[in-house]
Image 1 (spheres, rainbow, N blue to C red):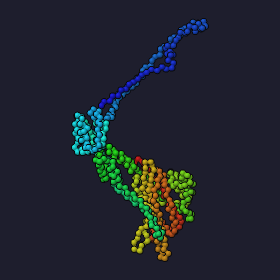
Image 2: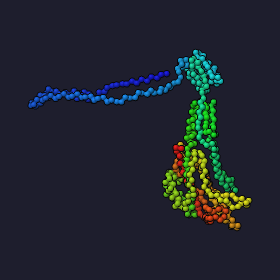
Image 3: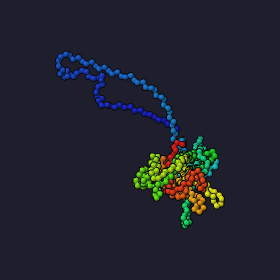
Image 4: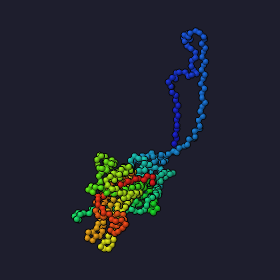
Length: 469
């Protein structure tokens, strides 16, 4: 089908204000009769010379325009008009299931077209066709069954729509990561049932991807995942393959995002032993960012790094501040990460004659999830273990005492903000194990320290989304 585009140019004229005025070369130089009579007699008045005609400027030579490049014409209708298919209206009614081949024979009974179907077409049609052309009937019947048709030399050929095969790259590690975090609580005297909270991160990316792609395929489509090569092969109709491609683009845009998490683990030995913990009201007066929208409640989120520095300075005013660790990790979206800062020492000999190591420190288990809006959701399980040495009064043996403080929470902050976790109060009594001191009381280079006081632990978590990776 040829397409012709005509361009029609219009020209016109406009009468400008002052059109009745003469041009400079048309100025009347002869005086009016009564004006001549009114002139005083004296020297004769010479007639004024006629104004010279204006010289038209030379035309400007513009560079020649390049020849027009022909544009590609888009054919909107790929179907060649066939009068027998597009003009005849069918008043056909069908109520019972009918074979597609029998229906096609019925549609073409009054035409000169021959019917040649592909082998294996055994689908049926159930419905009603009213006041439609033969072409419309063919589209309504064949399209839902993934069948196609074309007319060649007076023959209507019915074929199955061709399948397309496309291979997608799935760049992801084959390691299946499983993280289990438990927070348990006992009961004094065994009067109540102990409670346990379990958080499990179990992500099999390839299996979940295969499971998600399956519903996007047609009945005859198929997909195969090669984990070792990182390839997903999809064979289906073109529109189904395109749907799989769009879905994979959205998936990869999320799972490939990376987050850098900076953790500051700070210990504060409060100067007032009788205090009930950190004074948040005093902290909010130094760090206004800790105040909520009502300017009364505490919002434990610091928007900027300057607010973090102010918070650390305010903590120094409430007690002895010690930065235990400042690790930084990078992980991918929805992938668990573990930060462990502890000291392990052998315990005193058990009655069975074996020694078991005792760990004291901080264990952080986290799983970040970052959305397209820049908000980061963190599933955090901090566990704080403190080991002290108690001297048995009768035998004088050093007995390690291990105190565990842990919690499990989910929080949400913006990209670059810092979440403040605190409240792990611990009142130390006895001999505290310091660097160079074994928990079993054995002599080392540094002697055990007698500890007594209230200690609080503050954990600052700053997630930052890494763009462009």
